[in-house]
Image (cartoon, rainbow over all chains, first blue to last red; front, side, top):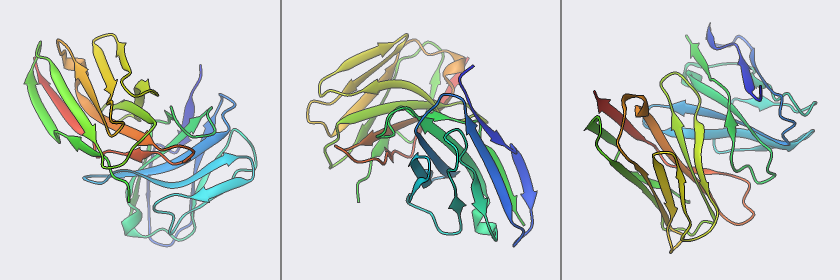
Length: 113
Length: 111
């Protein structure tokens, strides 16, 4: 089954404790992206990747890192999480270099206390 | 910067009613996408539009790419309870690699 998977689905952590949210897709898509969703603010792009070893900042990259060492995986790293990074995070992938028609993962709800 | 104005922000309707929502911008786009997000899930693509004036259906859903390329609408006919969710429009310009997103229309259906 074609899908985007994220882990963990739920995470509660404390300020400053490094964490990684994994994202994997099995559709051989070149394009992958991370979003955060907050009430009243819609979906905001954090980082995206056009292909292996190619990443670029989205609209809200501060406080986040990503890597793309393999085509299928695109982990999101929070080196020192803060409470304002409490949010619902989505990973997405697309087989179009332009990023249209994106397939989304199920989401990771992160709470930073 | 570029913005998508999505309206209405929320709707509460009776089962069986038709629904219409739209997305407008002051910028010209060459792609319009409509997504639905069920509670607790990630957004799922409903309809993709790539040509001005294009009218596309997906079951009870119909979407159109505005002729001015600055707007799009989504209609849902004969709504049912499983239509509940948030509907997002999304778009992009030319070779721009980023998608622009509306803030969503939240739909509630009373059985």
